[in-house]
Figure (cartoon, rainbow, N blue to C red):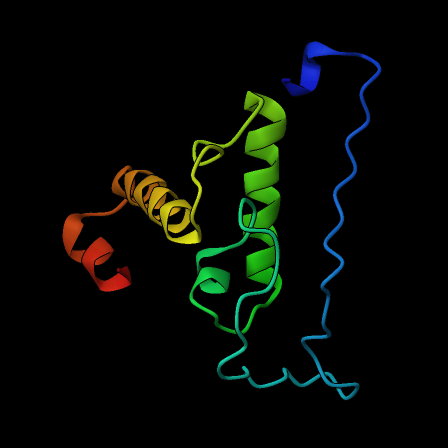
Length: 111
């Protein structure tokens, strides 16, 4: 169902796996190693799929995936069964989006 298809549908987004990314003194916390996967596969950032530590940028990516689902009625990787399939589909979309703004040499450095 698309976001604007029903006037009586409420969508709640919960990013409940929050962690403070700054110390009380304002300094950034260092990234942790080997965090393992955290989150929901459909909305997880590529960093989450790679088991890396997460931060505010990953929250924005999850919000972006949620917005895609709310606007279009689903994400392109909705039917994928395995986490690796979901990750591959996300990487393909990121490559296409990056190719709109950057050349292949730059994109190759990211992947």
